[in-house]
Image 1 (cartoon, rainbow, N blue to C red):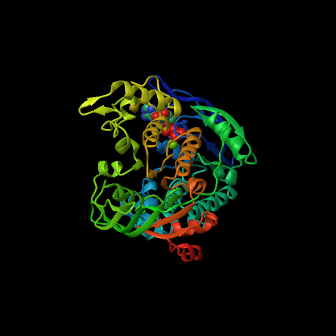
Image 2: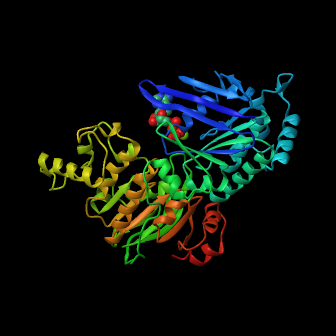
Length: 507
Ligand SMILES: Nc1ncnc2c1ncn2[C@@H]1O[C@H](COP(=O)(O)OP(=O)(O)O)[C@@H](O)[C@H]1O
Ligand SMILES: [Mg+2]
């Protein structure tokens, strides 16, 4: 099936999310759609899948103009889509979920046997290993994703849209997905593969279309260098690797021993975790989302109460500190969820730049704020951190994600720190700002701060870390040197004990 997109445009009010997009997907090709967060990729796909109505333009299937007002109509035409967030029923089996999509019933009930058989046939044909009778809620994320793909194939999808499918996967699962994509392609299925990761488009793409601010800004071959692709994606040249000297790590500044955290639902999510962060080094905490990293970090800061364990800074016990007291001990914190824990959206850039600091002598005397000092600080930080804002009085909520993150980073990096804890420091941030934030993190390290980075992006972990601790199922399963291959860390992220973990895990 040949799919052509002609002048497709989508406006939300006065905002143009897709601006006259032209794109052709040939039969049996893997067409990568590369673009930063907010570029308009999902909007385009949602129009293709009948979830959004185009403002202008046309979709053409095998030479015939088509319009889809529901996903059902898109599926009918041979288009399948796997969303960023899966749409499976957790308490149903794989086969039941696949059949749900087809609504094929016998005497009003699901024909379980036929469903199992169909799933088995499809998994054999496309090499998608999955047990038809397993309950979806018991399956790892990577396998759930396969079920979504099976669902689309059961509907005879000729063009399969995968919207950022790798965001939730371990490196091994990504490899497996790529093998599945190659298999589909061999059987003639076209794939639109959406990502913002350069490595992935180079690994799998037949053709690459780059989309920026709602426009297709160019196409590229997979042989293009990562630097060329990044430049197309961002619109200027970017430095993809962080220049850093080897760390000169000093004494342990932060020590955590035996930390356990029970979440509000009563699950033990952090299990007896111990580690130390040393002056002048970056400790990277790697792991797939949801393996206890978030809770571990929050427990260090007093944002959640650990059920067991202790934390020391320079030998002082801070285990019972509340977040303000932790910050006063010299911890800087860039939270994972910046809009919740990082800034107050309705407050101005100026105010947010001193959010936890306004009690400092620098910015207040008793109850009286030093307005001049606060303004001077804002001017300074906006300039230094290149925060793109109309004025310092603009509410932070109206900045782009990348600039919101810069506000948080600017505030946290601008006071004397003993420990810097940054969770997903560049999530949702444009490539240009990633470069900048990474440089600042290394500068902080080189100033002698103990830095802890939590990231689900292995590239980021490698770019920054001097030691890497890998979390799986609430535990640190190993602490390794960044010279070990990605595959080893990938295995650890999936819970396997590797020789590297065994050798280096004694940290
Ligand atoms: N329903 C909507 N209403 C208003 N704006 C939207 C809507 N959906 C998406 N947008 C905006 O359109 C832009 C593109 O979003 P999206 O297509 O999700 O980007 P991507 O998938 O490339 O990250 C973003 O600025 C987003 O805020
Ligand atoms: Mg998207």
